[in-house]
Image (cartoon, rainbow, N blue to C red):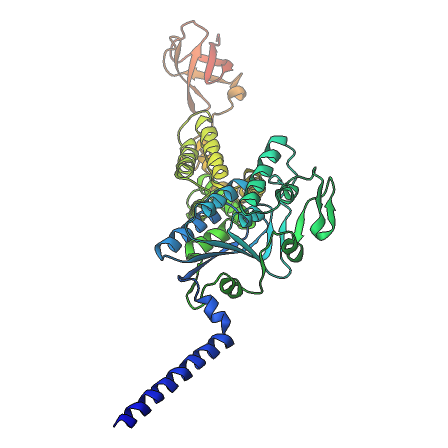
Length: 454
């Protein structure tokens, strides 16, 4: 019996030793999985693409709020942007700085201009082969360099502050924003001269500390940060956000403004169709809807649009000496401009749309001139003989005609000339009935006669 117990103990000990050996072998063969298990929590991936504007800020705000609700362990920003509005980049940067969840920027393409500022505000930066970061000098809406010294100084300080927070060389960040600086970068054997701007390739960024990792995929970044790739949530734009992105495209925006302006004015000046008015109103609604969802248009822009449209319609029916039309046009224009993300871009779109709309309006007005609203203000009816109206007779041919007075002329009365009875008047004297008379002159509708001595 004792022998059996001893053998059992040995067997259990042997099995335990085998298990330890097996576990050690597994850990040795798959060390990556052990690293993945180092951090717990889901990973929330947010794309940072296209232009940086208010729509992107709203989108990212929603992403950070959702990541907090699902108690994510890591937020990954997939960056590929040419830049955009620095004020919106500043808001996104603040969002990253205040995030309770660790963040990593994965630059898949370009992190240019304001995009580089966003990347620098993340806790870590990973870059894909072929990507770049930098070229952050300020430009206006037309792409021309901003020369305001105060603005440049402010932007340089923002870039330097973001770099310093991540323990990176602040001179390089300032050299990305200021063309007038000279910056030596010994790590890559280059010097930025005055007039140049710093833009780092993924290899150079790694050497100067502006990238912490070169990764071929988002999953590689997630594993590098010590998280599992089995619980990854990729944030996607809603249908409304996708539609807003399409509607705020400069070309689409110009087309909508053209249809809106032409449709509404055509419906007002050539009423009765209905289709131009419906299309015009729908185009304006889509314009304001797209800019509202994108975060450009506030509620007051809708109010300005409605007021402007109402005043333009009222101008056609209420005499105001043009005041309603001027105020309505101004309200509509201000609403359209305030709804867009860029005053310069919308001014160009609005100019093109107005020019095209004027051509369309003139063509329609000429084709349907008989139906235009202007016909309500122009007397087009004529008093014709067929309608029972007789034109005024030219009575000069009655001068010298001889006839007889039918009634006494005191001084007016009735006389007969060649069988026609006419109302006549004397020069002031009395003429009895039955007397011979002659037409002396005519004065408009008056026929002046005199008595003929027999």
